[in-house]
Image (cartoon, rainbow, N blue to C red; front, top):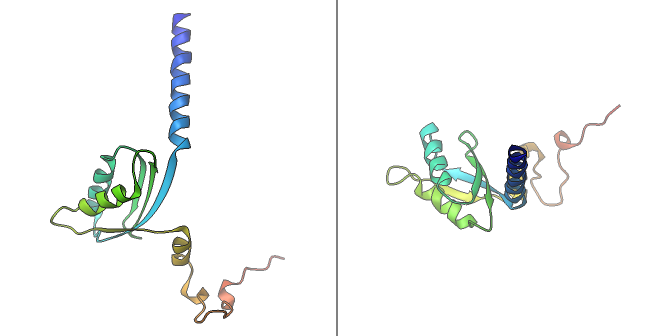
Length: 132
């Protein structure tokens, strides 16, 4: 009976911790300039792992982006950006900039879809395909 109660208690504590972690998770999308290799990515990740409240880190060298999940009650966006910019020390210079959802979507739009002038229709390459 004692072992059963301990198992139930451990499950309840795990569920409570899981609920708290997911309830407070905020996502920060960043553009990170200055990374040139896997070592740069490792420096950024190592710097971010030291911050209390950072839950998940995804740094993409090829696209020069980062997606950070964090607890907004424990850490501010400015602290995350600052940690990235300090991560290179004196040998590397990283520059992090917060990317809003609309800016992120704008980056993923092919050039042919961006109207040259305002109020101009998008070219045909952007028209949704018509299903049969």
